[in-house]
View 1 (cartoon, rainbow, N blue to C red):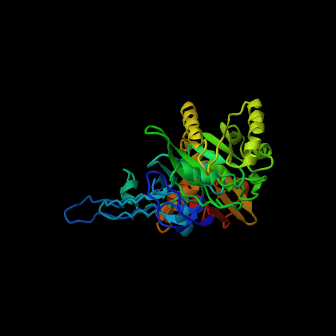
View 2: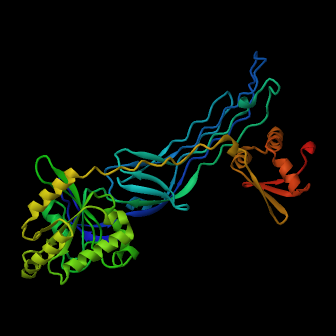
View 3: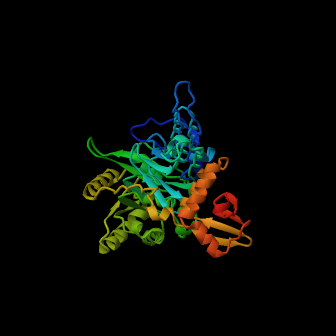
Length: 447
């Protein structure tokens, strides 16, 4: 979180608002949970003059899913600091008469463009959301349980069992916001980055003559002519050790990752501008080598000062030897600024468009064999059976019904779990845990 009292950055498509205090959040951690599935129903049709009514218990409804959706009207992640928990609605229970439970309503969580979502526990990248209305599933709703009508067979025409609904998936997400800009202005503090942005766009960043005046990135839209415009980002000043968190640290380096071109602004009043250039490029490489490889236009600022004009020939000659494109400007007087923006527009036209990352599919279908895989662990006097498939069946079993218990026992036999437990040494009366369910072991024949 970064706090500053400033006039908010605006583009040429927006009007500047009154002076206000604004919070800029580009990181957040949120909890998401899909809705629980509804329970199935045990019911039998009993109507006069209907001799063959039979089971008519309906299935439970599926729980609602949770999606992240891009909203172009959002620019920060502040809402997630006020509300970190998000839950979709659960599905309704099934009812008699073959009535199916209603599906839970899906939950759409709006995020600003440029949001990157990670699984907070594993660190896995889940989605990179950049396009308008783009959405990605981050928490799946639980499956609804089947009613007894679904279990009717020619040999069991009156089943007295139903399934419980499964709980929705839950997880913690880590959200990061990376600004979507074509060009980024980088350099040491007080190099004139905010001044340049304010001159070429309608953005109004805070400008002062003390270090770290800019406390968060500012965006502005540069309209070079009637047909050419691009988004310019002012990145807060970097210092030595920024990749390790020094100064404002690496909080803002990720905002440079999406840019196609960098304007490396050198302070003409600095004693060693070339050393400053080397220092910042080193920090970019240490944070991410791809940042250091981005094309740059090196610009010496503050040409209105005599010391800057004295250094310019030396700086220009040194950079030309390295094959580095360089220009000189005075952001405060406007000298060379239009020429710089024209060159930026030309370079952008030559560079390829930025690649948009495709969201990673969060839920992958598992092989059928993997559903029945399991492991057995002994913890003192207790036995623990691990397995996605059997744990799901245990959660869905409604232990109030004798037929449901018998069905669960048959599944243990059919999947080889009973035999594996017996071979491992389980004895009658031992406690066996399957997921969250605690059972007392008994041979199948005695049930």
